[in-house]
Length: 606
Image 1: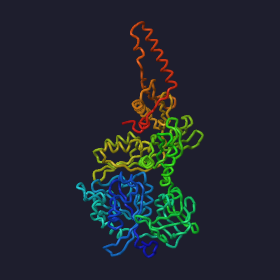
Image 2: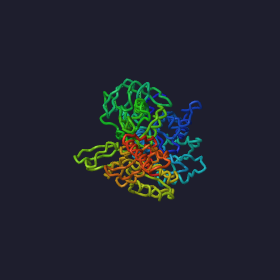
Image 3: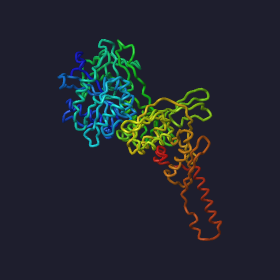
Image 4: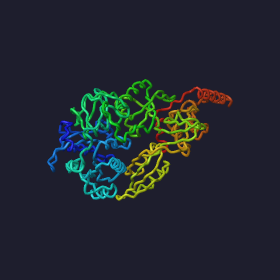
C-alpha cells in the first residue's frame, strides 16, 4: 500500500473500538481484519492485535495497537483505507484510551447482547463524546443463547442516548453481519481533515521499544507532512531527532516515502527509550515548528506504589536490569532504589493501578525468572508541615512525626458501580465501609442501578474490587476516575515484632480504621510466624501507643523430666535456669518472618 498520496485522503477512515472488559473487542477486530483479508489461514490467530502472551491468557488488551488495511465497499464500489486504532480495555489505562480516541474520527461502541451496558461502556462513551467522535453502536455476541437484541436496542437508546436504528447486531466470534460494520464505517465516519500545507503536527498515540531500531512512535498526522531524513522535535521536551524510517502498519511495519495529514503510521528516529516519546505529545518539524501542540497532553503519573524486593538477595542486580528493560517499553513505570531492614535491597515502584501492578510483577517473574516479594500497595499522600512545607509521601517509612504535620490530604476517585438491584444492599454497605460518599443513584432501563460514589483511592485499592465481585456474584462492574486530593485524618500504624518495628509491614490508614486494621493484622501474623525458642510479642502501634497485641508462645523443653522426686526446689531451680536462658535468647535472638506474613497485609479483614 502506498502512503502519502494526497488524493487518497477522502477515502481514509480512522476509527477505534471501545467496550467494557470482555465484551469482545479483540475478537471483533480479528473478524474485521479477516474480512478485509489482512490475515489469511497462515497468519490468522485469536487476538492478533494483542502481542503479549499475558494479554491472550487473561483475555484483556494491555498495550494499544494500530493496523492499516484496505477495504472495497460493495455498496458504493469505492476503495477505502481504514486505520483501526486498538485501545486497552481497563480503567488503569484510561489516558491511553483517550489519546487513541483523539487520533480517530469515529468509534465502534460495543454492547454485549447478554450483559447490556456496564460501567466502562458508559465511561468510554463519555470519552468518545468529549472527543466529538462519530459513534456507531454495535451489539456483539448475538450468537449466544442468552443474547437479547431488543433489550440491547432499548439500552442503546435510553441509557446511552444513541440512535438504535444505527445499531448493528453482530457476532465477533462467528463473523455474522460483521461486514455491515465495514460498510457503516465508510458511510458514517467522516474522512480526516487538517491543513496539508501547514507546519507538521502529529499526535503520538502509542510507542513501543524495538531492540534494533529503538523507540517506535505510532502517530496520527493532523497537519502538514513528514518524510524520511526530516528532523523532528518532540514539543513537550524540545528534543530533536532525525527520521530514519516511517510508514504504515499492516500486521508488520511497511515503509513509505512520507506521511501526510489524515494518515496513521509509525516513525523511527533512533530514539533510545519510550520515555522520550510521551503518549499524547505532539511531533513537529525542527526547522518549521508548529506554534502550539495538539490539545489533551498530560504527563502520565503513577497512582499506586509498592516496594518490590528479590526473595534472594543476590537477585538485586538482575531485578534492576529487568525493571530497566520493562521501563524501555513502559513509560508509565517509575522506580527508585529502596532498602528495608526486614527485606534487604529492592525498589519502590510506581504503577498506574492494581492491574498495571499485577502485569508488571507477573512479567518480571515470568520473563526474567525472578522470585519477588511485594509490599502492600499504597497511594501518594500530600502532607503540609507546621513550617508550611509540602511533601508527597508514597512510602510509610517516610511518614513524618505527628507533631510536625499541619494538614494531610489523600487522593479521591469518583467511582461508578453498575449492579443488579438484588445486590444493592451489600454494595451500599461495602461503600460505606470504604468511607464512600454517595453522589448519585440512577435506576437504568434494564433494571440495573448505577451508583456514583466519591471514595478514597487507598480504600479502593484495598480489596474493594474483589469484595465487589464477591458480594455481587460477579455481576457488578466498576469504573473510576481520579478527581484530586481531599483533607483527611491519617495515621501511620507500625507493626512491632519482638519489640522491633518491621518497616515493610507499616501502613498508613484513616484514624477511624487504625485500631481495627492493626488488630486484624497482628492476629494474621500470629498465625503466619512460626514459634521460636522464646516468646514473641506482636504489636500494632500508633506512635508510642500500642493499639493491639498478640503473643506467640515459646517452644519449651520439659527440663524437669529427669527429676523423679526430691525437694520441689530442685525443679524450681531448673525452671528458673530455663527462664533466664529464654530471657537472654529473646534479647539476642532474631525472628524469622516468612514471606506469607508480608502478603497478609493485603488481606487483613476477610
